[in-house]
Image 1 (cartoon, rainbow, N blue to C red):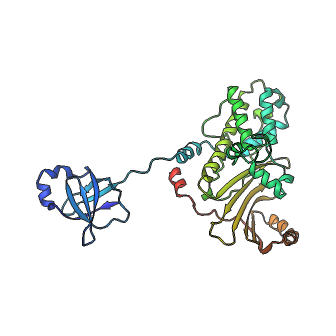
Image 2 (image 1 turned 90 degrees about the horizontal axis):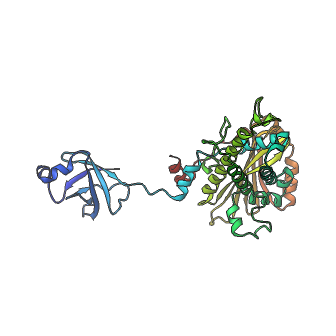
Length: 387
């Protein structure tokens, strides 16, 4: 923001320029300034250095103390207001650190899927095998997430709420961190680091990095990672040196942890949660992404919106939004493949019957060919952090 003084209240500009003040008003000079008030004509009175000047009211409120830089001199000099940016918050700093490290779960899930089928798994140290088994246990099955209680449990154990569960260990009646995705990731990362296997910088070895789970990006269906190619250590059943394999595993684990923590930091100040749930799919592992948003407290009746995105090999990318307002329900689906649209349309009658039996009033049920556009940014602080 620039200020152009219209007059000098204490001295004329010519007189100031001819005197000792001239040196302090050279182009590029930085001067201390403070607002003194507003005169009867509505002009803002500022004290800048040793002078008192009048200027038109700026577009934004000025702080009690600030600095200006002289951009031009003359009868009406132009000054640039230099207001320092606010100190970086803990959340902004943590986001800035984790964003370059994060990557989607797909590379890690692909490595786990391949390891589970290879004899090389038996060569791994016992503590690493145990940690891998616990990570497998933290994944959900399609049957588990197809029911209300099962989906609720999967969301609670997705890692997004680990710290709150640790603060209330009896919340779900299980041992601390038992079955939690983040707890399992932390355990495996710790075991690998203790054994001397380190994560590489810049995230995973995947060639197609997955965008972070940021609210302003909206939902994004995540495909499975490509299968290992010939020469990959995961395919070598007689591997003598496990370091390349375990270093890569450590990289993928740390990238998944950073991604999860990005989602946690994003949800800290908003009534909106981005949740990612790893699932044991058919012949592989998939990622179900959820976006859960609660309407404002002023909404009557209360409104909840659940969005989801999933990409399965047989269906392609599928996305949906379910909005519940009181007892009224709106369901919108999108599918990238026309054949998937047809498959979903054939299930609509069954879905209508189930919703009707539950007492809900279905206002809309549709499935469109193609994928929706990502929503607009919801977080100005986040945009500042990314920049």
